[in-house]
Image (tube, rainbow over all chains, first blue to last red; front, side):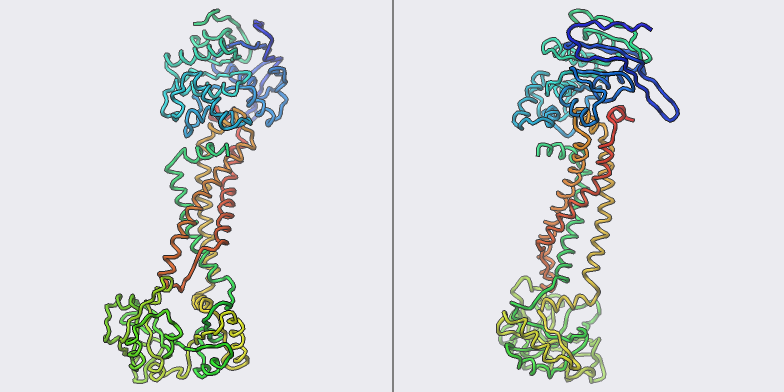
Length: 242
Length: 385
């Protein structure tokens, strides 16, 4: 099967070569990814699409350092991450990756401000600096006036924007989003996608987004399709986006 | 400190559950504080030095009496400023449920016990009336007694020479006790030893114990040893000690208080261990996705382990401190209710031991869920597997 060649936009930030992933459940051996090659340049906004079980979340998890490949190599920002220990990988994630999940995954007992500050607890920043950076991130996602609210006091769209603020607060190299609009209504979803697009265009954030939704994919610069563990198709999104 | 909001957030996630767990922990530690104070009171070694009153009783047992003739020999020991004696009568008023201490005392008993505040006229009446008895204000109030009342006691231990077990006393005085710590003494009845000794058919010429006033409290230990030496190798050997030590021995008659208290505390803490262990395990189970998020954003396995352990220890420390403060506030009330006979206070040792127990239990109950949190695989946890 032909693997579509990625379209380079700049220097590759993510370089994936021959990556496979095999899960073993008892005697059953399940190969989820088959020798994937992929380059993602800095500043890209890539949408990964495909049916359930196609391996798109597995690929995203490996790029984000949450999982390791069974074979192949994975470089991010010049560093080979597929051989890092669990502790080193945790440190690497803290410094390089911001995460946005489908169900927001905010800590319910913490205010929006405290949720956004979470990644900064792993840095040496002072409390005042942490507060200031979190406030800036919240302002960037348009929720400065909701800083003191608990997640339960926010709408789904607002919660996801808090999650985005948490993802960008430590200025990561890479932003990975797993179905970021999967739990939102159309209006909130468009707000969140527009925000991601703005972060990509205006702030140069490199983004990889897994989505089922073709409309969500339209906000990306590139769309890649996975099927049964192989990249099958690449397409350019409209130059200007929705 | 920067992780404190995170620890508190974990605890406050389910407020009612945390509150109930805190109450359980507080109740357990309140019990610990009170029982440990009792244990310390009954087991801590004590010297007589600095105490101006000693109790001399039989070395064999508190139930063994001493010859009343010992009084003169004790009085002759250098350093002794006065001697009185008393005998536990153990009489019953109307019904065995109406228990109160009733003691036959020598005529000079009140001289050696100035804490009993009795008007001079009533003191005189007590000394002049062969069947005279004085009671504390609390006891008088309990039974509605007034001066001049006749109080019939049934001699459970001592039958009367008149062939009955009935001892009829005349109430000639009602005393008060000013010191709040000793207020329980107001629940006693004292009557004259002379009437008791003349009337009884058993153990005439013996007394339960002697109260000795020491001229110089700094010499109390030396005086106590001199008294005991006086009667060494006799048929009735003595043991002279502080009143507190004597009261302690009195209570020890029901069993090894230290062992009983330790056994109760062990049972309480074992229950607490199961209860909080289960609560922590449940709390962490519910928060697997949140912990996975923390690991996702870069918290190491060790950081997650420490976070859960810190949460568990914080829960125990908060509840435990509240419990110890409750015990500290309750102890004076208990002390007052027992007339100072159970004069228990929270020692520094109890606070320290309590603190060690809080941290230890926190670590024990926190470890299994912390290990589970540490070992969770992010991808599986986020996928709800």
